[in-house]
Length: 284
Image (tube, rainbow, N blue to C red; front, side):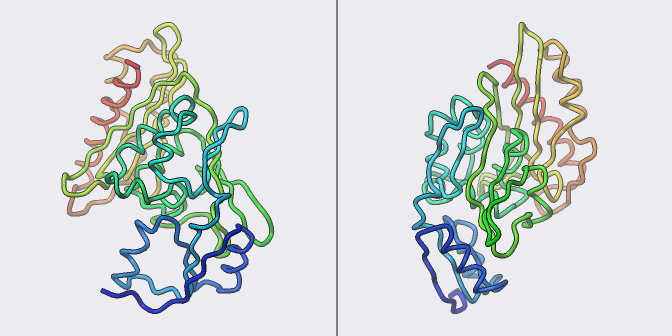
């Protein structure tokens, strides 16, 4: 199908992009890599009157070191995130999850910030961002503000972004020396997660000193498996401890039933994938 008619704008600065969104009002849409928005436009599930393309804003691209955090520009592609040495050294969980996103073609066009702002509960980067306590920096007409990942995702495809705000960058606290694993269950024909688990742990002398576990597609927003984390911290990194902790993975979740899985099957997947993710992470 052919999208409905719209006005196309391609600003070259963040301020110009914010101004364009403000002037266009609620009928405007932002396009980043376009891997999620373009199919929606073609199906006419959305019909914005103005499309603001962020692709020419070079300030939104790249990964940099800022002391205790790795900062990733919102327009940095998945491919760039996956290959960046700072991400590999200090945010390994992001690299693990990014490697599972769609296919190489999509990873070369899709963007890190676009995926987070799209807020698809089956998207693979939301739970890792939550598990790593990332902070999302957004810019509007009133300036910049920082939103913790735990407050950014509000509901299905809904975030804390206001209509005239754009996501500028994501600040990820360094998890240097942490081990990580992203375990994902999906149909072969497509890459969206039916359920996935993002796990990162820090061990000291065979004991689990810290643990972060995020769940993908177990609610309308990504979730932290706090019960699993509590069961792991301070315990020896043994198969028995991991297996016992993983049984709490579905605690407090609210998965939906659809053509891919019913509620109980998703809860079962959460427990199994959590055990696998933590076992692999602990092994280093």
